Length: 88
Image 1: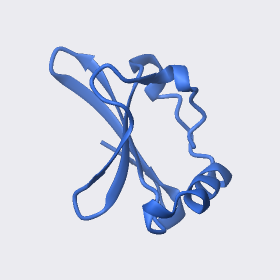
Image 2 (image 1 turned 45 degrees about the horizontal axis):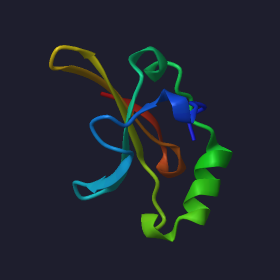
Image 3 (image 1 turned 180 degrees about the vertical axis):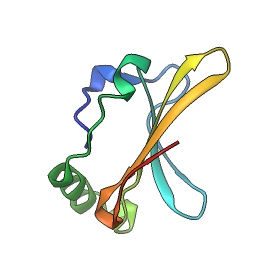
């Protein structure tokens, strides 16, 4: 959905997962050098949303990278509901 490859995803701590804090997010850890390269692709967001009924009509993608000891950088994308990006 954001132009990264499967090799850019880190899975040592956890695989990509669904989590909710009221809204459901797909959360994935990515390689630090690739976090800034993420660019939302609306057609891919629509394709994934249409193919995944468990998302209940909403796809928000939260990506983060470990940037130092105890430090994270994150970006959140939900372009189908009007939030192209919410940098965190």
